View 1 (cartoon, rainbow, N blue to C red):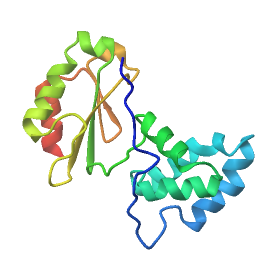
View 2 (view 1 turned 180 degrees about the vertical axis):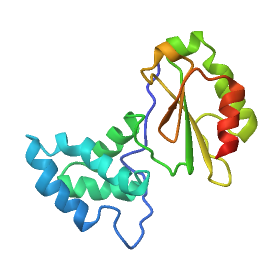
View 3 (view 1 turned 60 degrees about the vertical axis):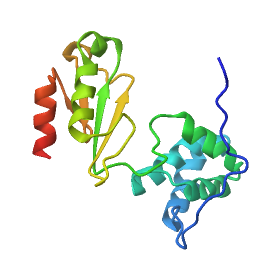
Length: 173
């Protein structure tokens, strides 16, 4: 298997005037998060969550700000954020449709759910509609194997789905 490299050492980051990691967030990191961990590197995942919770995603400028706040290498922040599927490295749509692709959902036809959404919205997995309303993703497991196939729509679990039911729910949004 070939290694997929990331240009994390030489990448250029666009910056805005105001920080993503606000003074209040830095205070939370310093006073509530970091004391719970032996090393600042161990506080990286909660730091990424703080930014994502506030902004809906983790911009590259925020990664640099986190690296500075935790006194760790920016490449470590980028490599960590890009490793985990739970972190958004680009803005997501107003509504996120997450289809489960676990083995149970695979047996129950998850690919039909994904295809129905792709056809309706004109996007592929990992993409956002041009109007910014919908993002389609697939997740490894939503832990609802007994009610497969399932999907999350804006973090609300939808069980025993058919493509028609899923499309109806999208229409309601």
